[in-house]
Structures are given as C-alpha cells and as structure tokens.
Image (cartoon, rainbow, N blue to C red; front, top):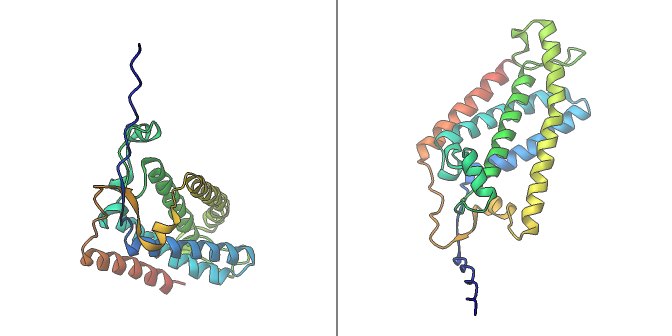
Amino acid sequence: MSEAAPAPPTPPPLQRIRIWDWPTRAFHWLLVLLIAGLWWTAEYDRLELHVMLGVVTAGLLLFRLLWGIFGSSTARFSNFLKGPRGVLSYLNGRSAHALGHNPLGGWSVAAMLAVLTAQVGLGLFSEDNDGLAWGPLSELLESDTVEWVTELHEWLFNVVLALIALHVVAIIVYAVKRRNLVSPMLTGRGTAPQGTAPMQPAPAWRLLLALLLSAGTSFWLWGRL
C-alpha cells in the first residue's frame, strides 16, 4: 500500500504591521495628482501652469530618489531592487515574503521613476511652438536642440501612460488574488506573515535633508521661469 502524500505546509498566521512611512505615501499620492494635472494642462494648452507643475514634480521626484537612498527601509532601492536570481525566485514562488515591493514590482517602480525623471528633465529644457511657455533650463540649449527635446518630451509621455496602465493592471490582478495594494499605501499598514519585521523608519534629520534639497531645487528652478 502506497504512502499518502504529505500534507502541504500550513501557511503562518498573518499579522498587521507597518509597511510604508508617511513620506513615501505622500509622494505616491502627490505624484498621482501632479501627473493628472500635467496631462490636463498639456491637453488644454495651459502651458504656463504646465511648466509650474513640472517644476514642482521635479522637486518631488528628487525627494523620492533621495529617499530611495537613505529613507525608511521599505522605501530604499537596496531593499526591493533584486538581481535576476531574486526575480526568478519570486516568479517561481521560492522567495521569502517581501515587505513592501516584491522583486518584480520593485523593478516596475524603478522603471516608472526613471521614465518620469527623464520626462520631467526633458520638460525643463522644452519650449512650446509659439514661444509663450518654456522650461526654466531651455535657454541653456540651442533652438534646434530645444525643438528636438520638446518633441521627445511629448513622445515620452506615451511611455509614461503605458507604465501607468501596467501599474493599474497589476493592482487589479493582486486585488483578484485578494491582496489589497491600495490600502497599505493609504494607511501605511498591511498584513504579513507572523514574525515579519515591520518597516524601519529613517531618522528625522534624513527626512529634513531630503525635503530641504528637493524644495531648494524646485525654488531654484522656479526662480528661472
């Protein structure tokens, strides 16, 4: 008589812990509002306001890049950017539970930040066809280069929209799997297996430094408008 197959291991009980700090959550939702505003102002030719929103977005992105280097544990790039082996382990279901972004989601976040940084950076050097609105750094380039940069800036927004669509699809897929990604980004808390260490906050001085550097950059760009 053959032996019965062993029962699958019982998953550990879940606990509710801190996942995201408030600076990361504030960045996320402010970015959502700013992208919507940038789309609307470009679509309806409110280009002076579009440039102003772009300057604010530049400072916000700089903050997130700095926070990804020395911010709270789940916000750091070193915490969620894994190599090919880590991504494959996650896809094969062999990796441990990831608090915050999983290895695949981490690279999608990095791609979004990289494309948005390029998009906003190009916008700082752009100028509209009528010369009525211009980026604060456009005077540093020759007119032909400005024209080329402006065209690339407009085209790259299609890539931004594609990445946003993929992000929304991922949220829906996880919702179908009964894993809510939106609630932790609103409240900062979510569920994780028992024993998982919660998010480790960064010292307040690091937050102050990131805010001063990002706000100072935005004010400097604003002064060139």
